[in-house]
Image (cartoon, rainbow, N blue to C red):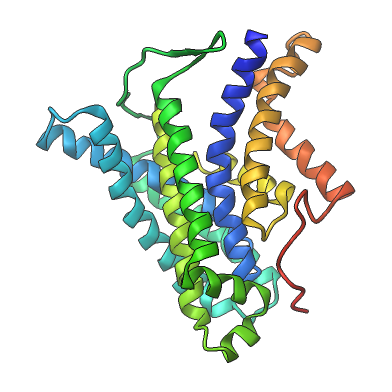
Length: 309
């Protein structure tokens, strides 16, 4: 039982990070009908920016508590990621809005490699250690262990997702985003500026990716220039699992995928004598993707985006 609880906790931690990134995919798809495959690399930029800020803090104010440094790192990484994502939208995606769908997809893949190359030039090829900002003393829950960093990650993910729900459901910007996702032409006739909505969507997605990137580094204590590729692909799988275009589906899909990965790596690894253990946990996300696309292409919660054909 203790092992099961431990796997669930690990899955919730992993799934929370997937959900934050998946929200960026699903929001951009909702308003623009575009899969931004460079979004995982925005997570990487957030982690790298957070590490750079932490190094500056160590030289300027080394006596700050770890939790204060963590929030400063997140607060500094968010505008960096927003600037990068808005630059991507303005230069790479906006000129291709009316192009065939294959063109933005290929462009997104190219932007991903471009971001990785720039990161490699700035921060180097080698993995970089990410400092432990919170106490390493674990907390016991039902016989399972969870670190203070993981507790903070879960809390920040819950707050971020809750804030996004309030923004989408209760604010004027949220109504404009939902209207643009439903029918951009009619929304334009009603006075909604689609360009502003798209820019806001990219900015919000980047902010969520920045939170996920810094917390990813804090949780795993190591980052590198290509770290965003696999989490980005898994977050895309999570968005498809939940129903791409649906923010609630992205949250649900991210959590489910994290739990599936964790349980799969633990229990299926035991059943196969370790053959499909933690070293093979990455395959579970793509198995889930194949099953969802085969059995329920619209995802668990379907898709709220109207057909624009």
